[in-house]
Length: 593
Picture 1 (cartoon, rainbow, N blue to C red):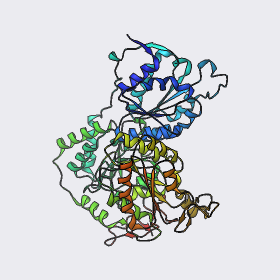
Picture 2: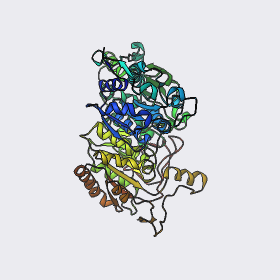
Picture 3: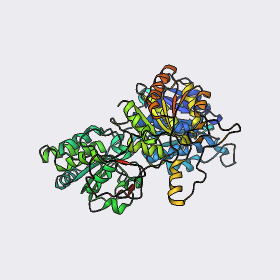
Picture 4: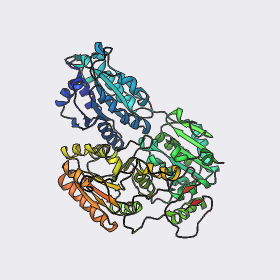
């Protein structure tokens, strides 16, 4: 065996587990780990500006690569600042490991400086939160952390390292005879798989509903193979966006009460069987559960047995890894029936999709937000990776943006942390350096973690930001207006001491985001007319690549445009014109225009 400093052993474990980047901020209690990282030739360390930003950067890296992201901080507020990022990854099943320093163990009961019980704080938002009590435990704690983060339903882990357990301590550790810990992946019950195929064959209007679990298990090829063999329409959840090309004949749109397409909701309401694979039946997807459930049957396949029946009691539940389940379903389908030809149900998909679209081609000034996404669809190619978080801009993105490849549309499904995109773009770009990364942001969310732009500038991480700026917290402004008849504490347009730093088309818009980008060494350009967007996008792509820094295109949009949404999938409020190219194909979904 080889004797080495324990933090060097921890770094050897991380290297062997395939870690390429770590994000973090040094502090007194975690310096032994940073000292060990200084000597690593395989891991690059990026100093972030906020521990939450570090978690989101690690998150973005994990989402785009499928690998484990790493974020490091010191004791006390460093750990508490990580909680939002841990929660975000727990909610969306993203594997990251957060590592915190800690006061010496003999001082934890003495209210020592920056000593907080971060393990107990983090337990509800992690798969495993652990404090190392003995130096010799640390290499195995790190190995177990990677295993837990990856196995089953992936998720976050927190490791807390008291200073007296790490500083100057040595262990017997030989990296030549150590290796990652293995874990089992649950396979489906063959009889249950055959029953699922029987239910699909018996149904008149079945639908496949892949969620984030299909993305995590990289089962998109098997999903499309099954759909094509049986000619079953596919309606991904929002977290499954990109699993199937949006121009595929079987793509049936995204169902929901916010991120949705009109034709997807209409098709779903006509379905008689829904086969969910790796999805959660989240409430902003289902809306009113009675309407959503209706008379249709449900099959639910998930790696986590506690997901089955949590929201929708399934007629058939199957515990399995998504990829193994879909492979088994493809095999069973080939054994049980010939490949099917498209029928009237598939024709219905094309009918609805071609006649029930929302209008995007507005020429208004101020710019309509919908037009922004029309320009995005037309300018950026299929290899572009988009990153977006929470707000009306994100809902419009989910409603209007077209995605053609898996892991090319990164979004937050449950937690919705404001500001997530700015650091997540850093992780995404580092994970996929050959792809153009574009963050779609709002003016309000951008301000939560805008300081992470400086990280991208410092380490030369180029990406593009498209900001939909209406100077509002507009996802809150809309329900305030509709449900409470008020407009209170949600406007961020203001006049500065000399009349306002930015004059928007409808008055001062508050923060000068172009100047803010430039102050950090990045680039920015403002757009106020719809026909100028494509040229601004072209400038941003070229300039960001040339300078190797982020470039912002700030689009000043109409301030009070509302997004289509409602409390039930059969009663979505359409606040803007729709683009029916023929008479309504069905009255099964009332629309209040």
